[in-house]
Amino acid sequence: MKKDSKMTYDSLLAFRCGYSRRVILFSRYAFKIARDKNGRRCNIGELHCSTSYTDAPIAKVILSLFNGWLIVMNRCNEIDKDDYESAFKIDNAIRDYNLNAEALPQNVGLFYGRLVLVDYWQ
View 1 (tube, one colour):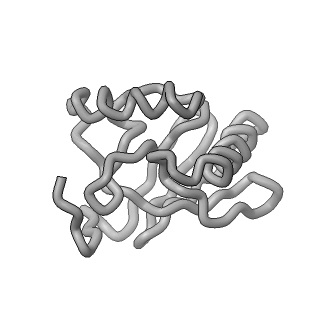
View 2 (cartoon, helix red, strand yellow):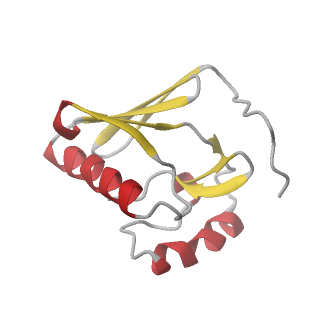
View 3 (cartoon, one colour):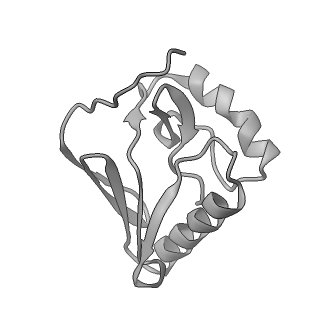
């Protein structure tokens, strides 16, 4: 994959809802807001992985606020929801780093042309 010098997004602002968290995508950042204690646990898990596995292909947590109720990450470009080939490529990283994640297209993104997990703690 070619490494782009600049990230481009479909829209400046977007919203996503998951089972335990809401995500606000704004500019270059993703804000993950916990809906309940399970969402907070996921946020803390992603913070722990991000600081422990610095070379893992995961979207890095930049900031954690309110005791884990909100985390800020680098925003990644989404891949096609039918792109199971890219999700399969990231599956080895899930096993290598023992991440609590599923290799699904909605959990994988592109960060400057590099495949990364964007949701890696469930």
